[in-house]
Each structure stands twice: as structure tokens, then as C-alpha cells.
Image 1 (cartoon, rainbow, N blue to C red):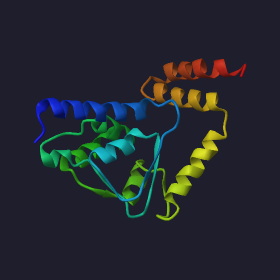
Image 2 (image 1 turned 90 degrees about the horizontal axis):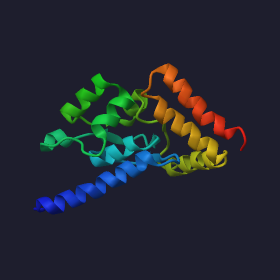
Image 3 (image 1 turned 90 degrees about the vertical axis):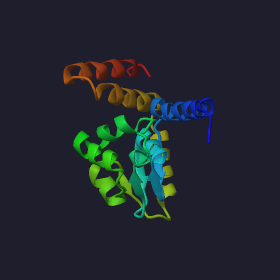
Image 4 (image 1 turned 30 degrees about the horizontal axis):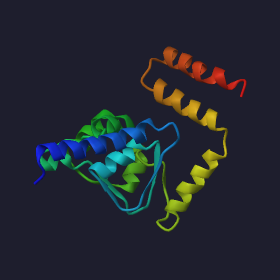
Amino acid sequence: GMSPEDWHKQHDLFERMAYALMDCPNPVIAAVNGAAYAGGFELVLAADFAYGAPSSRFALTEVTLGLIPGIGGTQNLPRAIGLRRAKELLLCGRPFSSEQALDWGVLNRICDRETLLADALATARQIAGNAPLAVRQAMAAMDEGIDQPLPQARRTEIERYTPLIDT
């Protein structure tokens, strides 16, 4: 029942939120305790890595509603799990389990439901205890280099490494 103008305003807000997560210079850790479907799963994919509870489920269900993912799902899912598997999941709108998410690289770890948030926060504290400029430069080197040819990615790494020598 939204007007086209209201819908565009709402979606612009969603886009800015998702892109802010993806562009955040600090690590973003998702902790999934339940269903992460559609936009919720796109936010998981926007994070740098993710932990999930054993009962968590994941899906990009937009095609079942006549839509496609609109905040990075069509780009982030293939990068996380490979193009062939991503096409099957996205085009079918089929949910998958936390075990599959772990096997396919969506999740880094499955944690007990009771300790999920504590585990994610412990990892965040461990990262926060490291040199902040080094953390940011390492993230930037990986994010920039992943889509570059290897020789160029190596140069990107050195460009991110060199300014840290004097810190």
C-alpha cells in the first residue's frame, strides 16, 4: 500500500544502511539466532563474517514474491558461496540450514544458541585488542585485492602495508 515515492524513500534508507555496513572500515560481525531471510540474509552477507546458532536458517526469498534482492544479495551471495550454488539458491528461493551455511562459507562458526552473542563479542574484543590501523589496513587490502589479478593484489597489499611501518 505504499506510494512509489514512499517506497523509494524506504528503499534508499535500506540501501544506505547495507552499504554503510559493507563500507565500514571496522569489522562487522553478524550473529544469527533464527531465520535470516531476504533482507535479513542480505545484512548477514554484508557483514565481514558471521556466526550462527544451530537452528538458524538462511534464504533469499525475493523471487518467490516477484522481486530480486536489492541490498547486495545478488552480488554478495555468489562471492560467498560461488556462482553456481548462488544461482540455485536465489532462483529457487530455497532456505538452507546453518550446517550448510557453514559448509558453504556463509558462516564462520556455529555456536550454541546460549553463547552465540558472547562468542561474537569475544571475537570483536579480540580484534579490538589488535592495532586498529593494522586491522583497517588488512581489511582494506583484502576487500580491494579480492577482485584484482594477483600481481595487482600484491601491490595493493604493499600499499596498505608500507604506511604501517612507522606506526
